[in-house]
Image 1 (cartoon, rainbow, N blue to C red):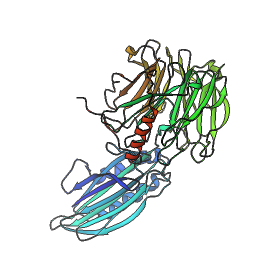
Image 2: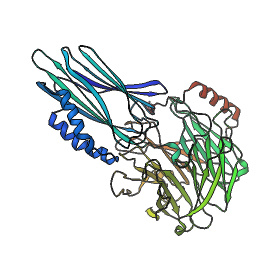
Image 3: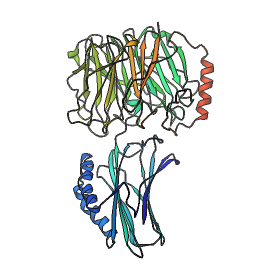
Image 4: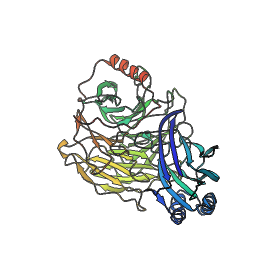
Length: 547
């Protein structure tokens, strides 16, 4: 008697990967548990996970136990096997598969002897999991039983479901039965567009190119991009534009949901000469940036731009910038039309008690009310870095709390895929050279921030940082990628997603002053790559091994 569960991940109808889990036979295996242990697991582990997501496991456990008991009753040898699987909402499963939009589940049972009784399988969904699982039915012959299910991952909110299955046979010496349980937990997805900074991993290309926007040495902006489908990971740029902006103090860029479906225009906020402006870059050739749209005056420092989940349709842009006198200004966009989506509301004053603020960083996390999420903010005032957050339900800001000192330049904050609930990772330049790194453990009740640790002091004093978690990985989670800037020199550092989590030596890019003149050639190259790749197939990438 044998059984197994197959998990197949699809994107746009294309199979990405099939994984076989919980395969068992009548011979004892590593994953096997006794019947009593299975009942205990259903009552304890299942309850903790489901109740933690808002479900009421107590109303399910009795029915689940009876269902499995009836399927395996009358056997001389009654076996049980269980497992747990955690997926990020949207279908992230490592190591080979990144984002899938559909999960197909197949339970299989077979035996050289005749199957006995009525093999069956069902899926129990936690009450907070809105999108139902589709039962696609079963097939059976004398020796084989198959039951199929499917579920969407792109439209499903956080929650969980439990696969219950069982089958038995009629042997000439023993009647063997196997009970199978698989608990799948869907945790909230963390989207690239929901944290600020000059660096983003886009969905251009199969792997997802890096897009970088930075202040030029004297005036205007420069853009870079890295071809992550090329084994050598070459950077292209810098390409200069926006001379009419004058000297730029700070910039923040995201890939938005506006534009071509499956791609998306880049949106940027720029603080320059006491003015705050926004601009677009199209997602089709020739990939030109729009003229700046001035939003406000009397600002200072580095701004922070994200596209969040509030609002209808595409989701509002959230833009925070230091006020020229004290505290911060919070602007947000109302829903616009595809040709002019920047229609701004605000500002609302935030954190006036901090006095003059020099730079900010922003992300929208999965903390707080599901589907809304809190805004998480770092603000540097002088040499101190403060953390504060805005609740997604009440839209009220917390009081600032200092988490680092002896800081300078522009900070960065993201919610990572480390930990069950996604830890916060933050960096900020250090006055003694290099940068401070710190993280907040969101799995603990009090969610403490770590002590700052100085990294890469040999870089000297930095002006800007920009942090992301990419799909490049060593342990199937995602490496941290950090851009740092000092004057015209920009460098990339990365930190593997496994112990000992050591930052790797900086890789310098061409200085911002070495402008690449041939924009036509760049546009032609990107057009060819756009035609060559399928942005819907986004595989987790691994860095080339060193020679």
